[in-house]
Image (cartoon, rainbow, N blue to C red; front, side, top):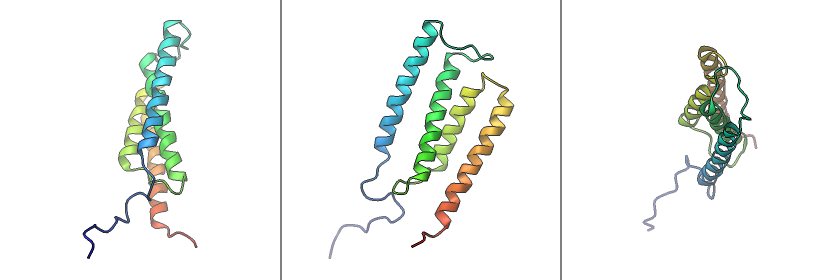
Length: 131
C-alpha cells in the first residue's frame, strides 16, 4: 500500500505554478514604477486631473493585475483566477484611476467589469469540457 496521498484533482495541473507569473508581475511593476518616477523627476509625467505619481503607479499595477487575471482565465492549462485576484486588481485600478476621473464613476465601472470576469470564470468552471 502506498502512503502517498491521492493528488488533489481541484488543484492546478502538474507543472503549472503561479510563481512564474508573480515574478513577471513584480518585475514589470518595478520597471513601470521606475519609469513613472523617472518621468516625474524630469517633468515629463502628464498632468491629467489631479493624478500624481502614485496614481500612475497604481494604474500600472492594476492594469498588470487585470491582464494577469484575463491571461490566466483564457489560457487552458493555468489555474483560473480566484476572487482575491480580481479584488486586488480592482482595488489597484480604483486607486490608480481615482486621480484621473471621479472616484464614484471609476468604482462603479471597475466593479461592473470585475463582476463580469467573475461570471465568466464561474461559467468556465460549470461548463463541461467538450471532447
